[in-house]
Image 1 (cartoon, rainbow, N blue to C red):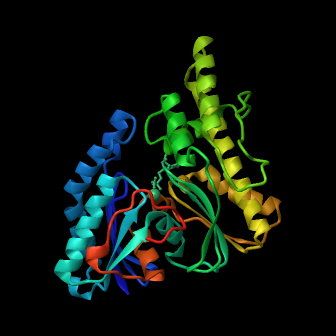
Image 2 (cartoon, protein in one colour):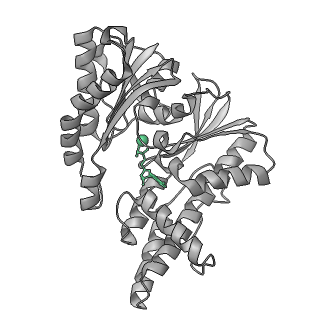
Image 3 (cartoon, rainbow, N blue to C red):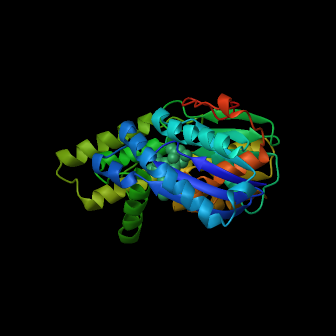
Length: 342
Ligand code: KG4
Ligand code: ZN
């Protein structure tokens, strides 16, 4: 099948044409991240206005570049949730309208499932698998028994991993989005002085559940920053040092908990996805620990541009979970959970 995917859950407006859920024929993306960088975070109202501005040009670009005539596109897939209500509405209303005008089937897609299905592009993995989804608003571990049966086995009790990167970056005055900013600062620290005295907590690391909790880590960063300011030592060197430790703390917990789940559920595949999966230290640590634990498993992490929000993953998720519904019934669901049907 050839599917046009549409993704507008947050601050990216994306459209892609994907064949058989594996082959990306074209994609286009517009991001309002630069605008949000000026305010240090996303203002939902402004994100939605930018979605309105970008949606038609982005879909036009993707469809024209695919070299497929509209009549040869088999279906439209659109993110219905979770996400920001204003942003989601733009994608969903556009998809509904196009489905009606072009007379195409429409498939609603759970954004979090979309992140997981970024791992299907090119070569589909073998199930069962443990999947870690780490985005700006979500941190979840699920067991994919097969494509139809997904069991949630753990998640964050408070802040998501991406949100923690973003909040720590704000405290360290490194700008938005926080993940790439923390990563860049951490890299500078490693190259100058690989010894750190700053130690941050690894919340719930030895806890028996597969849950996470990052709010204490955020408070610890705040305390460290305040302390550095008090002693007049808040400078680029200490900032890089804290950034390094934040990244180590978050990635330690994510990797260890996920691999514990892999061992407990005896699976041979681990799928990592979502914006935080673009983090190179996380990718490196997964590979290292899999070797240390002597696990013979297939580790899948999409290339960085398919970890952050994109429409390729939405088209792939729709291809492998093909349940079109009448366009009149497609609605937004900002609070949709990972294992919940759309
Ligand atoms: O999946 P995503 O693009 O959007 C949501 O669905 O939320 O994830 C965005 C999150 C942000 O919190 C951002 O800081 C984080 O992913 N992120 C990263 C990196 N790139 C993006 N976190 C750590 N390292 C990165 N390189
Ligand atoms: Zn996302």
